[in-house]
Length: 108
Image (cartoon, rainbow, N blue to C red):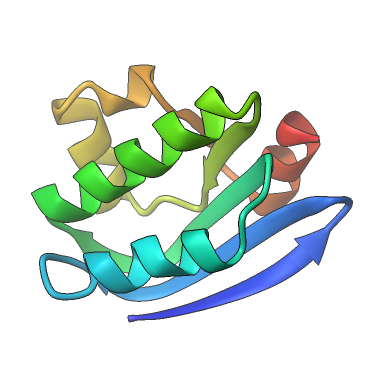
């Protein structure tokens, strides 16, 4: 898994590529800790798989962001990843958008 951080209209966009699982979740968490922001979009377009530890990491990041008065959006979820969010009811917790542009617009 790789994480690239770019700035877009004052929003930190975390572009994740690969699988988010038990072995890569700590790396993802560290990426957010080294690039703190109140406006975050996690672009999951190139994520093929997320396990329960990956979901827990995203929930943790969402909680921290909200506690700091910020907002976090997700974009580009594949059908497989989106169905996982729906099954776990996390689609009700997260602000999920079909495109990166839509997510950045909402989080700004």
